[in-house]
Image (cartoon, rainbow, N blue to C red; front, side, top):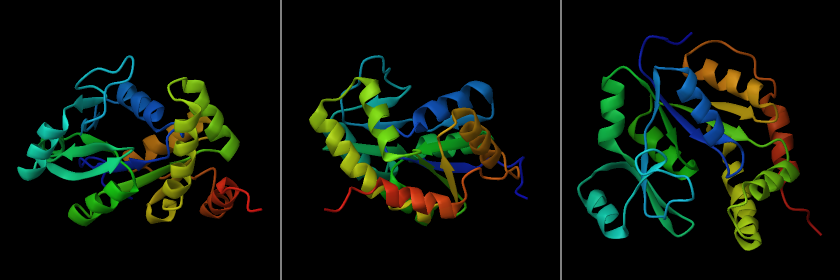
Amino acid sequence: MMDTDKSRLIIISAPSGAGKTSLSRRLISENDDIRIAVSHTTRPPRPGEVNGREYYFVDREEFEALVKADGFLEYAEVFDNLYGTSRKAVEELLDAGKHVLLEIDWQGARNIRRIMPEASSVFILPPSRQALNQRLRNRGQDSDEIIQRRMRDAINEISHYHEYDHIIVNDDFDQAFSELNAIIHGRSYRPHVPARIAAELLASLQPNVR
């Protein structure tokens, strides 16, 4: 059993549409001891997004200046935009005794684990390829071309699920939330989808080979 009183760094990764953001927002709303380390990005804000809440929206010049100043624990280019995790923000939250969530992709997760090996990592899987595609379309934010690109990138992202400490399949939102909440607070839990089934799910997400 882990020490539930010690502040912890939790990496959360998932393909677009798997429900990572919705799960994180519920965690924040129901737990005073959990915070999300807000990342910097060069992409423009989407409708409803607020600077300093979803991301710190900066231009490429400002982002590159932060890189040179060693201001990021990790950074990467995704969909032609730069994303980075603020070193100062993470350290301040941990020092304040908060559990810190990092919503980053598998590349960023690798970098964080190298720098901070004590971090725990969670991968959120969608229940099926069809469900992932439908969730992306239901958001109403992207063109068909972008959705197809996100689906292709999702396969690559999901292929790294085995690098993570925990796997959660988000087919039942309340169940997925319960599992994630238990992981963050170091409580024992029984995954409702074991790793073997997660591997089978990954195979089902692959494009059909003709």
